[in-house]
Image (cartoon, rainbow, N blue to C red; front, side, top):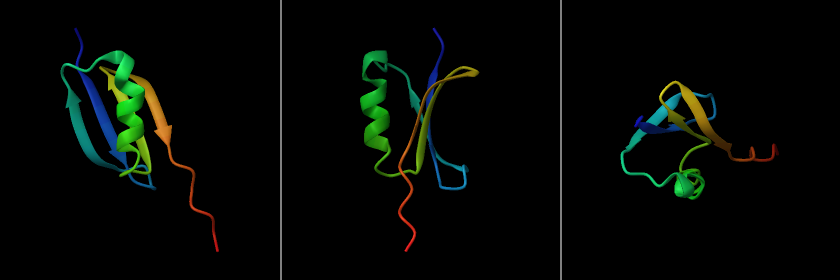
Amino acid sequence: MSELLLYGLDESGETTFTQQLRDADRGQLKALAHDRLKCFARVEVWDGPMCVLRLRRDPLPQT
């Protein structure tokens, strides 16, 4: 079984947070990623060398 990793990225695409998802229920990955999206501009979940989920917040409107 491969190890899932969640990455939190900033607006420029730099990784600012990582989390190992050891016993993650794959059915709950999207909900977990949406929760982490409150803190980061983008969230990605990787299963080894493959990105299995990528979410991003809508950019703030320019004023």
